[in-house]
Length: 420
RNA sequence: GGAGGCUUCGCCUAGUCUGGUCUAUGGCGCGGGAUUGCUAAUCCCGUUGGGUCUACUCGGCCCUCGAGGGUUCAAAUCCCUCAGCCUCCGCCA
Image (cartoon, rainbow, N blue to C red; front, side):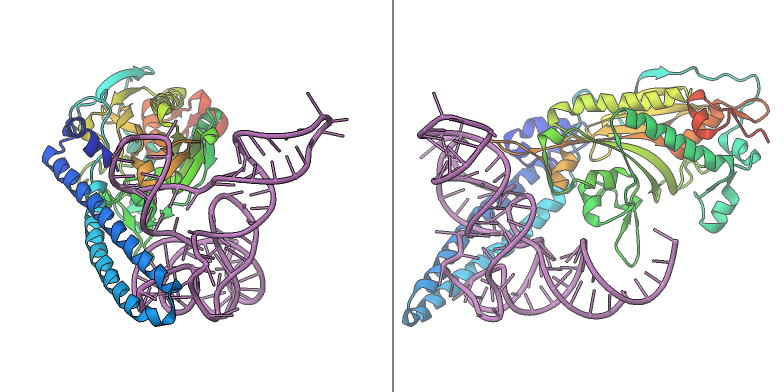
């Protein structure tokens, strides 16, 4: 959620910033008016409550014979309070609902445009060349019996798969490798819950805007997280942190569940886009002054992880039109996939500034001043399935075997994959 | 799944049966000050979080006793729903 104060203090700047995301100025003006109505009503309700409270208190001190008339007068005050409270509750509900749908203000440096307009900042690793026709991950993994897509579909449906044999081992090795790198940079490893309450989904900004992409259990109202960003961010929901504790840095490992509604027919082959995948995710809580630096830091860890795997990829500055509701700025790593002859997203890191913190009520205690909202950031250390795709496609050889990058060898226990 | 106990302003705690004197007690911790010069002690003051107004580092008012409803002129206190913690039984990895 954005700060409602922005609409009071600097509507023009806010409107200009949000216009880049296609948000209408008239909507913001309506929101500002709604906020003013809310504040006026709060003042009225408070005044009425003060009167009623004083009247009640006087009854307690009054002699029994005086009470009858006083109680009657207090009853009328009570009714007045109730009427005003009803108005306030209505305005508040509308206020909450409509403000929750306003996306975060993009940072000025974020490029303009919509999906596909990302700016390539740099690339790393050598783009692989082959003196044979490179296979895609499905061919490579199926030939090695490292994946079972047919049975995934039989048991669970489209967009599910079994990783098997060396495919399964690859996951453990990649996960441990990525966690090790993140830990070296001060991130504490976490295995989080992946079923969460509505508050956690709301607090991280996935509700109400992304409701259609989230799984919800039928009888228990648990949401399945689409990323461990959700339980990691919500760890410090409703907390006041001491400034000395910051930065708080985690690296979570969890399955991720996504309905992929609206993606019908997109990326249907293989395991690029599935309903369930595993991901190692970094998450940081930092002082607001430090979030830009932290963003760069997380991005550099992502680059370290992927370049350490010998994977060629490019760093993309994501345009404002393609940001999630919470993000003020986002960088993706896109790895080259020889099977598709295309760069595809393998990681993503966002600075959500105070947007999640305001909804999560996660603040920093400031001695002798107003407490501050923390800034939160998230970034993929390693999305297992997509990392597997990039790795096997880029490091494949003519015979269908895959050279294991040196950094992964100790975790995998072998130098070559799929050699029968 | 069953039975019982519990949740108070950083931590511990009084208050709940019997609604008003709760503007929530006391201790610890923390911050500030005073006094005394001797590893220190003692005393005083302050110390939940939020909203809102404002002449916005003052102050006013409102909310906040796990959360949300309800009863009442009045709720920490009575009623309902939910969440969490603990103990025992059952089940289980």
